Length: 318
Image 1: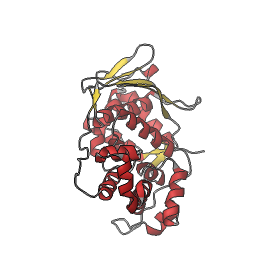
Image 2 (image 1 turned 60 degrees about the horizontal axis):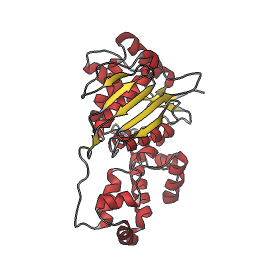
Image 3 (image 1 turned 90 degrees about the vertical axis):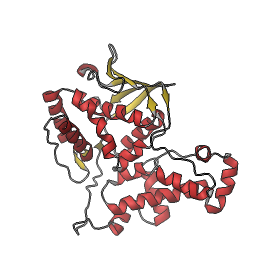
């Protein structure tokens, strides 16, 4: 069974390497995807020729990729724990063969392993790339004084004081420990809009971050009011669940019509729990599955031709 990976991620790798004066041509994909085998060969070649450190620093390019919906959804995480939960949901949506498994979680600390099938575990280059992306995302999500180590027996500090002193050990690159001293509101955090209608403010909050695991309690905290009072005030507008479902369906519809991203990524970006959940809820509101909706309403590309992203029902890896 052929497997696929993200072409956009390798484009980001190529740009980051070019910024360091390294010429490496990423394999071309079919739309947003490319064969997983091509991704693995490319990353191994980069590691062989230039070491692991350039791959560790790829995450520094993430802010320039914030227009990508998956990146934007990750950047909207409210704290490190939310970030890792979003990353794991992204892996589930894209059917990644490699997964980040959180082994320990405490105050200002996360320990995780990068795992895969016993017959084909992640290569150190793949470990390093994912580690670099998560490391770069942590400060962007509000974590301060971040330190990251890699390895089990003799951990190596790979990130501290905003820099990358060393790459992970090639023979022990899949165990990671992330620590931080405190968290602060992420840059660009949403400001309160006191005095506005609660339903309008709710729609804006949902639309700004549909990927968030919204609850009535966290919404009430954002709006600075008791949950029961908020629930009563939202009832006339469809209630908490109704508003959230409407906003997510609209966001998904816009991305489906744009035709630039796989359905699996759109489901993650819009906050659905998994692909069946996305299909079921979207169809309940539109009478069409996401794939059918895209085929009916997809906008023509700027050149006048419709773009049809490759949407195989095969496994994919970030």
